[in-house]
Length: 117
Image (cartoon, rainbow, N blue to C red; front, side, top):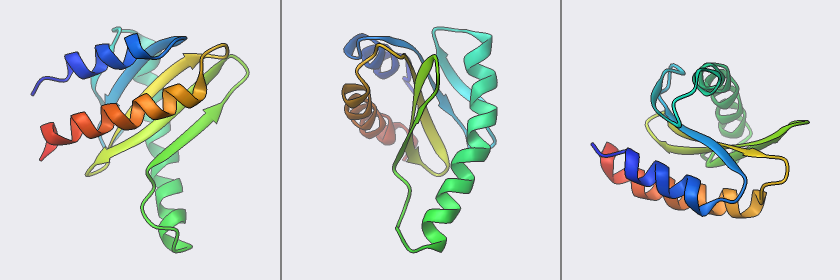
């Protein structure tokens, strides 16, 4: 499986991107670009939040959760589901273009999907 190319492309195509990761359903990072400890830790915490959001979406019959954005004081975090509980995390600075980040994350998720099936 080649995850590095789509991840690097995502970072290059998103002005303000600081890092990206593919995280498994348990919150364990499969790949982190660039390699950084804080992004790996963030994946563990976000996996729990994403599971809760996905469960709420199903419970209220809103369908499958596809994407979620978190706007924090110093960062924008975009979570995009890939398949089977795996998700893509994109971390951007507050000056980043969130709309472009969401769009590029969806494209990257679609490219990565083929690596999982």
